[in-house]
View 1 (cartoon, rainbow, N blue to C red):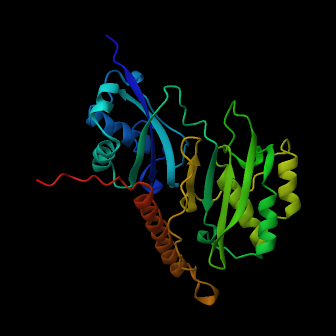
View 2 (cartoon, rainbow, N blue to C red):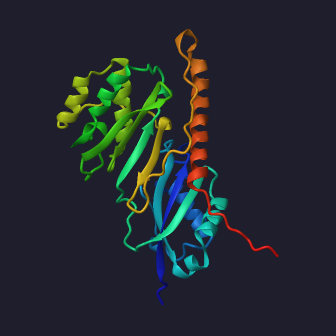
View 3 (cartoon, one colour):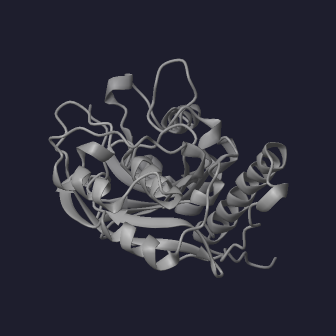
Length: 305
């Protein structure tokens, strides 16, 4: 006898430095693998592994932090009817690695595909990179505009076999902390593997004067001529959020103020390394505060005896 299933859509966030990426892999800890472990421990995923469905919307590499990602899981309808979103979130969150926040859950149509999102937004904190020098703000905005539009992005990606290199970047804008330029935010329908990190490294090298606008523009306009501008490290990248028709991108709840990097003669390697470790903690504090707001559970009032 077939058991009736229900498809649930959930949102989650996580700190990427505790996992070997989001996608399940053998013999290493991943975000998807941790979710599957918890759902199996609760006996919410049963039967052969090939019949168990738990899929994430956006793939992230090891070290990349995530404010909001999403996914689906199919479970028995009778189980969902016995639960509530509040009970499920608490049961999952209590068993998950503390570096993962299980934020929201709701029932969706059986054909809902979380990978078919409206857009994805990333932020990259360029000032965390060694030798960063804050460029002229107007020049930086001009460089960002080079990456907006629909184009063959193979020179800014690790192109997988069979992947269409044509991508649409909807918006790219500076990320400011007060008056200080600390990085950028980029929004697109979907990105290729390493596309945001390679874009970040091109912007970083533009700021140092190692690249020219002409070189970047030619890499975009002439994708058949291979160039490699390098890839920025993963630890300063944040998947800020994914937006779907049923679930728009949550607004920013906490305007975090970040400690500026050391400059001048005092910016020697040891001090800069300590600042970088502190800066990573600041990013994590920001994310935990965001999750606290996004994943706020409804208040349940109990009858007085």
